Amino acid sequence: MAFDPLKDMTPLATILSYANVLVVNQNQPFKTLPELVAFAKANPGKLAYGSAGMGASNHLSGELFARRAGISMTHVPYKGNAPAMTDVIGGQIQMMFDIVGGAKGHIDGGKVRPLAVTSKDRNPALPQLPSMTELGIRDYDVGGWYGLYGPLGMSAEVSQRITAATARALQDPELNKRWVDQGYVIWNAKPADLAERMRREHALWAEVTKGMTFE
Image (cartoon, rainbow, N blue to C red):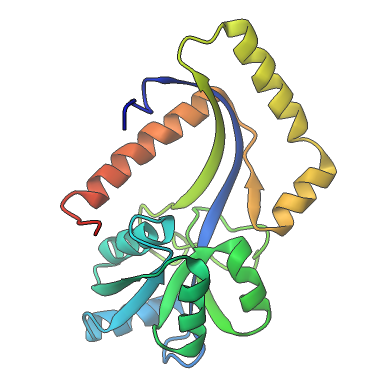
């Protein structure tokens, strides 16, 4: 890129965060995350997981999961989440990480079996489902997020006005319900929290993607 996202923008406001959920084909022998890990260790390389494409959040969710769990899986990139989910349902691949909002309908309809969410905490749209951390996958907190940025060097007055206006908008009950129903979590924090999250995840994914090829 022609700019450094850690240095060349002004963080203004946090907006939303979202998690992925690990779902598996209903006919698989494993019913829980520990059973899946045990199966993968007994059958190295035989688990295939789909994603929306190379470098997508669900691709990296799977890569980090494999590393943290000490297992080997085969990544199968698709051109979007929908065709990957179709193949999970059909049994062409065993599993995928999908955005909670996109997977919830298939989960509620009994088309796939959910095992865990990728965020550190449980997701309000799937409150019965444990997180990876709860199930023993250490240092695992993966999700996407939306934040508002401005150009470098914005005046403090303008920055503060935008930050305050965004915080007020996020308190709207109707807007909150609409986003929560779609699997999002309202992330009403400070600009410093947005900057810190970017720094933390920049370091994490630099480590995870080192040596990977994206072709």
